Image (cartoon, rainbow, N blue to C red; front, side):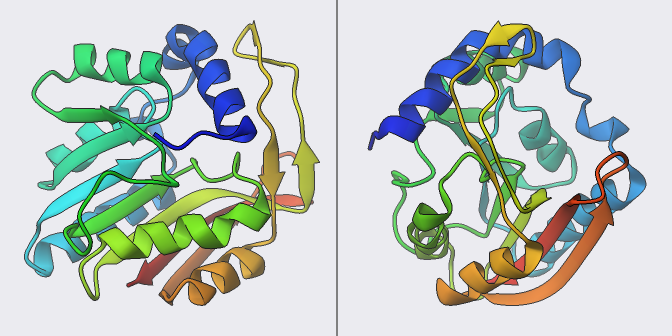
Amino acid sequence: MADSAHLAAVRDSYDAVAADYVQRVIPPEELDPVSRAMLSAFAEIVRAAGGGPVADLGCGPGRVTAYLARLGLAAFGVDVSGEMVALAHRAYPELRFTHGSMTALDLVDGTLGGVLAWYSVHHTPPAQLPAMFAEFRRVLRPGGPLLLGGHAGDAYLRPTEAYGHPVSYESHLIPADRLAGLLAQAGFTVNSRLEQPHPARADRSYVCLLAYA
């Protein structure tokens, strides 16, 4: 698995917080209606195109992977944190979870029916996003959908504590327009964009981008 300073920080931090993360982060069933609708729409699009394996990249403890499976997708998860993958295996033994990096996927070109990156790309430095998005496109079959959900804004964050534990990862919030532009640069066609305001911060938002390889 490819490694770098930022990947090592993400891996080590999420290994440390994994058990408490599961207790504190709401499950997908309790997300806001718009976010749940985007996940459902993504599942419908994949099914209508003939299905196929769907990668939940940065899957964490596997809750969203399992949610996609309940929506009728052949979903599997990939995460850089071994502790997160172990939690996912224990919670959902019927599903496949792999320890790996979104920047170097151990997958054959053009084999996926869909890719989900749900609040998992903001730890990647913006300069490395084009290569990561190109990797997403590499593994998707032609015309396959990518749903990217996450934080948007204009901020560099370096927290020292999260979920009750010390952490060393960074978060890079960039505007939704820039995210869409980077996807286009990687060869995606951005079909739909939905942005919701942050409830407490006027300079931040939540964005969902639906794009096709």
